Length: 233
Image (cartoon, rainbow, N blue to C red; front, side):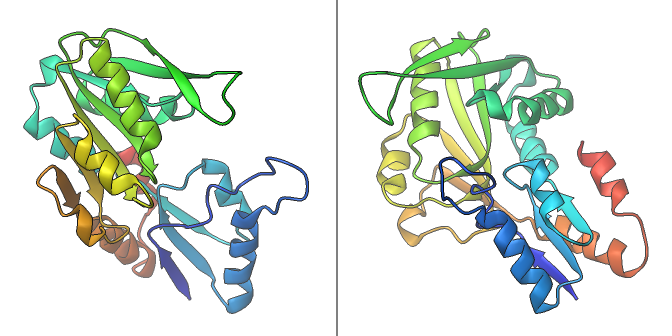
């Protein structure tokens, strides 16, 4: 039995942040195995090490080619800068740079010690003035982090900002934040349904189905899923 999980919902709980917290990403992996899953096929896990939670083969697919090719066809690549919204996404952003031949910038978040659980200072590392910036992330939940990063880019002189993410969770205040943002376009894949209130002109949803279908064919015809990884790296 191969289980296709386009969005692995508990991926963010992949380690203990404080005492007595569960590692739910591992628990769900164990539940799938106990239920009879022999193989897992998923798209853009929050962290690569989650693959080690599964006792069996894991095919970890990437939406980068679909998203990057869409953006590359719309924007003048000479004006394009790929931006990581935090230090944790730099490796992914670097893959975008390789595919699009664009320079890299990073938004560095610093927390105000006087304000609990709130990011108040954003420093931009890299040249974004007069550039079309593409913010790349694996998922957008409430939209707070990505919209604040976009505001920082505009404050540093960016001409335009496009946001891309594989998974559009879009919970809570996300609808209002995306509507009110100066970002010209948000690009997601359809690993999750887009809430009805977010059917806006500036939201584009691309299909991940061709990537998953090819991976399924390679698995069941004893082909090479690795060949997909090599193309998407």
